[in-house]
Amino acid sequence: MSFCRFYLCISRKKCNFAADFSERWLLSKFGEVFWNYYQYNIMLKNFVGFDLVHQMYNKKHDKRFDPTKSLKKGLKFLVVAAVFFTLWFLPTESFGMEGMTLVQQRIIAIFAYATLMWVMELIPSWATSVSIMGLLLLLTSDSGVKWICDPEQVGDLLSYKQIMASFADPVIMLFIGGFILAIATTKSGLDVHLAKVLLTPFGKKSENILLGFMLVTALFSMFISNTATTAMMLTFLAPVFKQLPEAGKGRIAMALSIPVAANLGGLGTPIGTPPNTIALKYLNDPEGLNLGIGFGQWMLFMVPLVIVLIIFAWWVLKTLFPFTQKTVELKIDGEMKREKNTYIIIATLIVTILLWMMDTFTGINTYTVAFIPFVVFTLFGIITRYDLEEINWSVLWMVAGGFALGYAMNGSGLAALVVKSIPFGEFSPMLVVILSGLLCYGLSNLISHSATAALLMPILVVVCTAMGDKLAAIGGTSTVLIGVAIASSSAMLLPISTPPNALAFATNLFQQKDMIKVGVIVGIVSMVLGYLVLFAAGSLHLI
Image 1 (cartoon, rainbow, N blue to C red):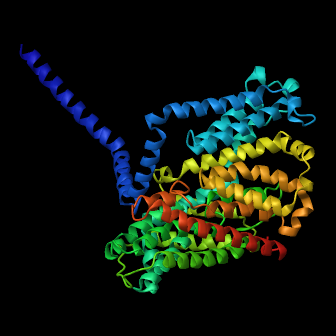
Image 2 (tube, rainbow, N blue to C red):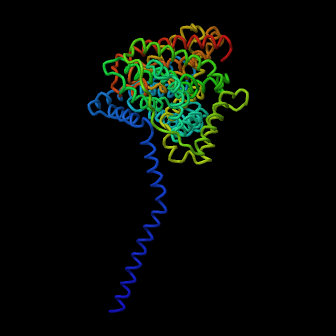
Image 3 (spheres, rainbow, N blue to C red):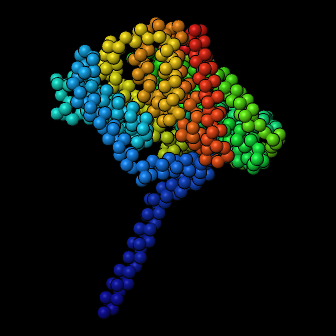
């Protein structure tokens, strides 16, 4: 009996020890992960304006999954499927292009599917892009379904490696570099500090503060996501809103100034908005136009345009919505972290921008420079694996899908076949510019700017290639492609037109008719001035 008691006692101690050891082991193994995850969430909650971004995406989610719209959505899916399969099964001869293969016909069907899905927005734009890549891989590539991808029957197949490489395109690296810079400046509080320093010279006069906010917002939007910039600047405006009388129109001017400046500011650099970067990809493609337009070259003619447009938009806002209170006190909360990492971020930011602007002098192209902050910040532990989750991967997939579609058109020979079959050389250059600009402007007001650019750029590259020297009269191919980027950023009519518009509209400080009024005036002037600048830059051989 005593032996049994002794054995039970030892067993209990072993169990207690085992439990204690397990607990310590779990804490040591997973404690760091849980702590980092906790810190990551705290960082997100402390991000200036994060609540506004969260609310915007919640509204979009609720709208997309509204059960009352399920029937209408189902009917739209049927329309898309009907168009896709009709184009798939039509006799090849019905397209009127001699020598068309079944692979090329399938690409036309996939292109029609992409167009309808992006325009109707039945699923998120990035999800459509992912599905495009999937369809191309399964139905048109050398790694597709065996019994429908026999090259002897369907024609030359696309390379599956090239389709997948769309997500590793140098332009994607350029996007990632911009996202990394934005994350680092937010973590360090550098963005808040810069806002304070840059807004101080504008004093207390209401109209001057309005101009200050617009210029600073435009500057930030050149290098940081315009959505994040808008959320941050609207938060800084919160104490200003409280000081302005509710009956006055000054609040409307202030609230509208941020999305207008964010949309226009994105024009200033190739990384300002996805359409800019997509245009640069097609303009600089070594196997395509190969124009070699650099980061600094882009800024040389676009930054002055942005400054002129911001001043014009400021005049429009203060004229349409005059201030009744002439002065306000500006207070911005938040401080920059005074630590080693912050100074590393500042130095890296300055070096990166200088290298971007001097790419033709150094020989380091825009895409390679974008990788430098990624390397530096990861080496010094400024950017962690948890920070990588903040990168807007949906935008990257959106852009990659468009690139895959462009490769499919060129890699299959479809683009060359279209050029041969349609007499683009007889088109009027001015008509092409006007129609492409208006089409992009109209679509961008209703659907994603990135989707519009991804849809139109491959088509316009085909048109411009076929027109050849005829485009020299209007500044060349760059006028058409960069013009689409300008038209896209000029589209700011509705709350659904851009995320900055949606965020500003969520403040409930103005009505939709106010946004439309400003959007029409600023948008039209932006497009007209933008195209004039492109004509001039093309004539002077700046691009």
